[in-house]
Length: 376
Picture (cartoon, rainbow, N blue to C red):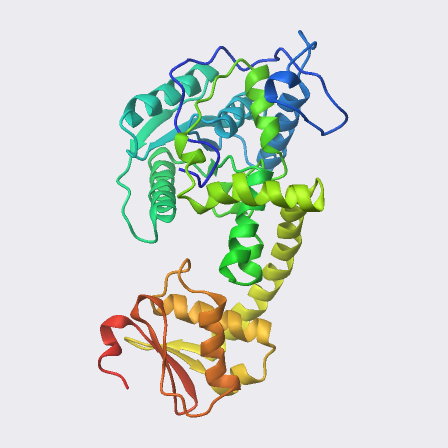
């Protein structure tokens, strides 16, 4: 699926992950041209792409206690294979145990075979335990969101089963830039533009500052042979259109460096959003309460707060009432906020998943779908 550049594994087995055949290095941190062109003239030396990924993994794992179990989410694509190889090399040096989980989404005819081949590559790299987990992808939220939800559920279940404290995901700087553009299109505010977090609970993303070209070069240099998912070229997916149509146009019109700038912007916005989220959470402790079938927000307390904090409280209240994050836009939250800032006797606001927001006796009352028929 195009939620990441990775997908299922290639039928060819890995040929190892040690110091590799190397490439022409075009300056610190730069990997231009095709991946094949990058791997020339460095036989016997550690290729800079391999070194960069190993460094990123080492940094991401450095704070973990010895004997911590780490699982790599490996699909067999270039990004996750490069991550798996680097983790297999670095984890033992840090006293960590490293395994891998391959999620079979069942969306292609040969998915079981290609997933098992990806798992075998992970075993060849020295990862243990390695497991394939088949999932059933539903339809809620569209194919991309449904596959992502099924995948993350499977990864969390695997972490519980194996006692893992960390699951590594292979999202790159390019994935981050695409996520920012998709968030901009949704108009969902700073949190959406902040992209993917390097650490989110047990999930860690070591490669968010690593370009996609680097993972491809590292695979070639290490003798790994990833399989390219045809879904990553299917324009029915929004992320694929951003990757192959939108970003190239931006690079052509604005010059090189757009991808890096978008990813850097995500990091800056994430720091701001985190600070505002803390303030909003503190406010919600006193301004929001829950009844048996309602979420109730105090208009008097919210009305004196800055918009950036007030709307965060309202958004969280809507989520707690039953709205799904992917469906709740900044526009929805703004209409609820208008019940505070532009009150003219409006009756109610309809939100996703049948949630209804009503102003009543000095409170914003958010009612789930199952109870909305009883409230006016």
